[in-house]
Amino acid sequence: MRVAMAWGMALGLLTLESVAGQFTSHSVAALDVTLALVAYLALKALPLEGAVTAFGVGYLVDVMSGRPSGLYTFLAELAYVGGKLGSSLVVVNTRHRFALFCMAVQAGHAVVAWMLRSAVARDPVGTAPLGLLPLQVLLTGAAALGLYGALRMLDPGEERARQDLVR
Amino acid sequence: MLNLIQRHRDLLLIAALLVQPLAAFLLRGGRAREPDFVDRWILGVSTPVQGALVSAVAGTINAWAAYGDLRGVHLRAVGLAAENAQLHEQLQALTEVKAENERLRGALRYAERQAGARLAARVVGFNPVAEVLSLRIDRGELDGVRAGMAVATPAGVVGQVLRTGAHAADVLLLGDSSSRVAARNQRSRARATATGAGDGKPLRLEYALRTEDFQEGDVLVTAGTDGIFPPGLTVGTLTAVERKSVGTLQPAEVLPAVDTVRLEEVLVLGAQPAASGPLAGGTP
Image 1 (cartoon, rainbow over the protein chains, first blue to last red):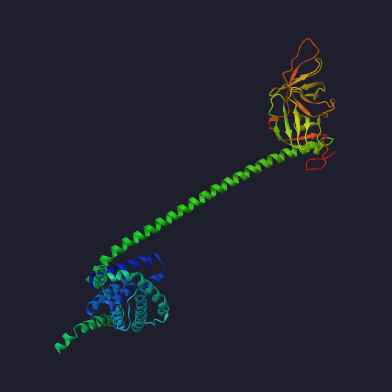
Image 2: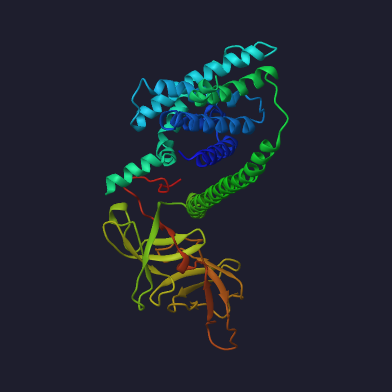
């Protein structure tokens, strides 16, 4: 797994998302493009390597969020661990299964984020953020479909497998 | 213990990576931390890219919007040009209708002033043969037009019907060299005969006695004694009156009152239409 490439890809995706948010609807803000990356790490990366990469990705999300509180670093790490545990229960070998996997990760990610915000907030957060959950899940699934091909570049094993197929 | 740690090193590290941000988040109560050098580096890398992307996207959007506006303006200009052409055509048609309406109103007023039957007719063509000055109208025998009937406009005498068809008639113009009309000086009431002299030439005044009062500028009207033209129709204006010291006659030229080149509608006097049209009527 290429850690630096994953971080670079995360930074690029976040930058693109931040730019896209200026010119499109606000629903883009509900999309977490890096979650697909973290989910892919959970499926393909070695445990420690993936954990470090996911930590870095979460850190980037924190910084790019403008409010680096550590929440997104934790959530990325949690999504990675949760995904790693879940990946042993399911077989994700196609683009569409990967999208479904990302959608499940996104759902858990959003719920935990809401719980943590509610826990530390002085004023009640309410359940309004959860109203965005279906949209977030759908958008993340769509993003996962689109990113699947690019994410496979992060895995040298995939390249080797393709080269073997060519030979 | 150390052995245990080494055996579960990865797991412990992962746990540390999980716990550290959570602890930081909870300890700060969800508040943002002060940016450290890593944060600054990330912002330093991403911000120019963001700026460039925003500029590129905004530029593309603006260019596309400008193109769209320009295309919209172009399409609107094309639409307006087409509309303008259509309106111009309509205006032209309306102007034509207005002019025709005014002519017909004049003809109608004239017809109302004149006693006897009259029939409005439209000029549909001129005789292409140079030797005979005649025009064709769209009324014929079925409309009550007969050969020898007088044809006039509110301005004056045009000529007389030369021959007729079922729905058309040829009118010999006053300027034709075979045309004759008994005339009278409107001012002095002196009588004479106006004859055609050919295309583009003024009429000739014949049989005007030298002793009679004819002056240049006098208006000549029909005398009504030839059995064709009713009295009082304008024939033309006298020009070039020759005052001779000897002889019995004084020749002159008559400028026709009607410009036959520009004729579009005429009245056939004495015609009794079988079916009354809007401009056709009987004796008032």
